[in-house]
Image 1 (spheres, rainbow, N blue to C red):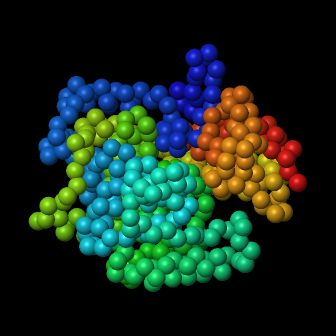
Image 2 (cartoon, rainbow, N blue to C red):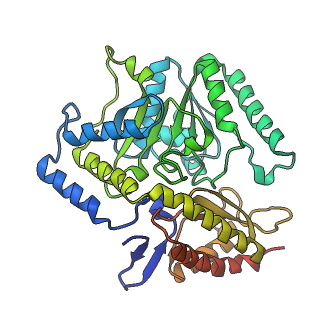
Length: 409
């Protein structure tokens, strides 16, 4: 209930990563249950070729929330299917075949979405990846030593070279997360997304924003890209759209792209697209964001979170950096603040995770659940979090991080 989970023994566990960064409104909200039950009693299912009140209302509401001319909705089942259909639509619209994405990114676990991402979880399937995905690197500030201006310059120059090498006429879209999530909240250089969008416009390349994790208030805005003053051509969304109460997703598309298919068949389709129950859950969820002022609370609690974690940094030798946008953040644990060597490397083996596994175990013992990966402890609680609950969570994290402090050099 709320920000807490309860196990079979009655232990209360503070959920400090909103499940998998998706339960933005908190657990057990009766308003969603009521909306789902009501819809089940009225229309539980019709084929995607039929119109329902819930579908119509949700499409209008999302068009109201999304900026620019992002007014057309294609409803999906989850984040991965939103990404899959964004990729297909980009290729259909442009007639081009390549999709460019960041190495340190995650876009889902279906074949196309997995191939698009740079997450190492795809490596065991390496020989079976889908073709025509091109990856590029984006340097980040924490380990960059040459100044902010040079950071942006290098990031954009690297992307420009990759576009030139691949041939811009072959590139359908650049796919980027609105804000980095499970790869370590690796923040973009200031001005980066704006410069990328400018490159896209120059070469006729579509810009797809993956807002599956960073969308719906998580970063202090409706969408993460709004922190960067851009408007993409498509938005892939899921997670916070229904906050895990019902599997559901959506791909929002610009009027410009949609117009091409006014008199041409759109070769996309899903049996459960625009499922009435999913639409009803999404409508109820969006109403909660607005009625409960959750985005405003995210902004306020983000400021408090930043202040409190800053205090922890001075207390713990193993805290290297806290990267946070809104309430999408993570603490990076390092062996040395001077060398910035991570406590566990990228794609760490079980033996290399020895220290971080001890930290993760301690967190659970003390009554806190959060996503721990490699050297990262994620901090992404539900947007309903209070200052008192933040203090509760950070006190537990502080006690667990003390284990890592013993391994610093």
